[in-house]
Length: 175
Image (tube, rainbow, N blue to C red; front, top):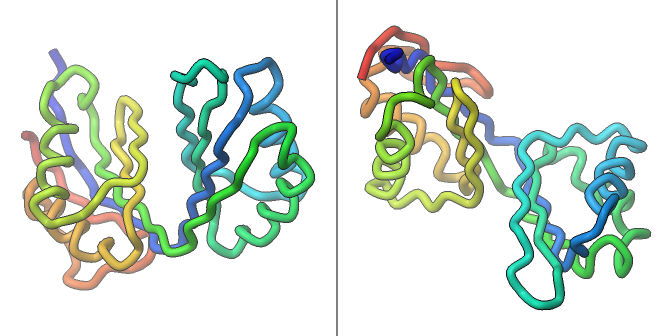
């Protein structure tokens, strides 16, 4: 079994979250939404969709975009209101923290450790995305510096004393 190696904590404080409520559970619904964003050159980072649990067959899709693209995102999606979703809710003051490393997929407890560290710091997680080498959490922008410091400490990473935008702390430390 591969041994997890947490090598970095990265962050961003320039995120906006968009949630589309009432997305129909039908072929092409997500395609229409993300085609509209692509047409105005909006880069979408993290996407989370739930399975419709109600009898109406409507879901929610949340995603992040750069804060400076929020206005363009709203304008591009507005014509789809009513057919591809019922309501658009935007949160401008979001940030993202991520831990990066190898072996997370085959090592139980890494995600739990991240979530426990953030909970102990009173950081509410708005969205979660994982891959075999990264766990990312969208959180309130104002909580990003403390979250980065707490994760950095929890995973025993060494790095600079001040945090720059999108700059990782780098170190090699096994769990």
